[in-house]
Length: 73
Image 1 (cartoon, rainbow, N blue to C red):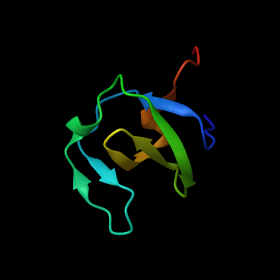
Image 2 (cartoon, rainbow, N blue to C red):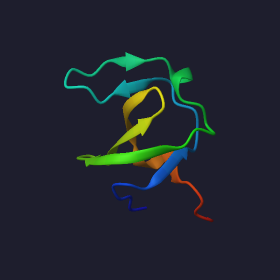
Image 3 (cartoon, rainbow, N blue to C red):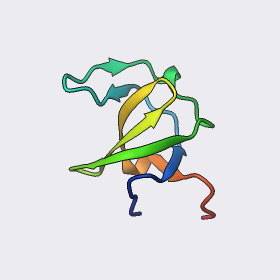
Image 4 (cartoon, rainbow, N blue to C red):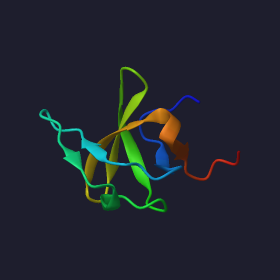
């Protein structure tokens, strides 16, 4: 599935941790982002990683773990 900057997304499945999108990345607990929270893609990174802005920060999330909000499968 192709994603583009500006699309609204949510998590498909819970993650074991979240990786921050800071210049020096940190691992954060997964409960910072719930499955029903909507985020916005702000960058597409190499290796199918997407930088997504959620309420509690920007995180790097593999594209296969995300779904586009409002798109019927």
